[in-house]
Image 1 (cartoon, rainbow, N blue to C red):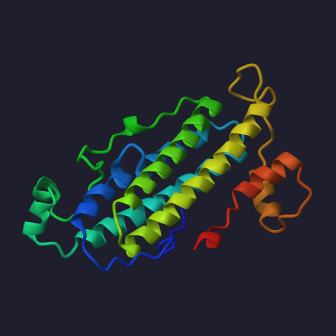
Image 2: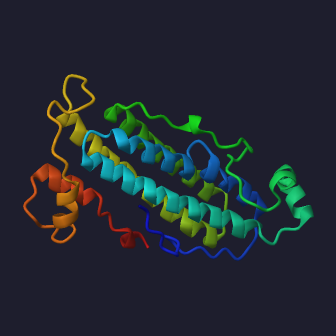
Length: 233
């Protein structure tokens, strides 16, 4: 079950319209390296992770990606909301307007609609997490490109924050990959002995007292789920 907090992860208050930037920014909504693809990728892959550690991490990050979809959508809306028809035509968004007016629609910067072929689920945890690490690095690169295309601090601030989250997520996935690489041997995609579910123990003990006596691996992996977003605010 998802709990919705009625605030953005990072405050967005764009004061100047910029349809050119809105056209570029939509790629992080509906493009191949965007936030919608990331959210669906992780929330699908989580079911075939070999233990609750992987399931929980992909659930956490996939859920946060939905919050990033909301941030990107808010930015696009604010960049476009006061635009005239002439400005929309001059920005090359007339074809978008014909179909959607000023409503949001997930495409890349070239207007290509979102497709689920942007991501994969193989059922192999190492293969899937490798894709996830690459996805985070590609998203980081796109955010850097977008930052290069604007000089508006109201746009740059959220983009810098989102870029930093991609770096954090890459690090979390790298830890998970290395953890599973040690546990999965001889090319197997599941543990020889499936670990007992630790979800209840995690919820009942770790959140109450993070310094409980976990094994090193379990402590590290549970700690990965408690990433402190406030550090980046």
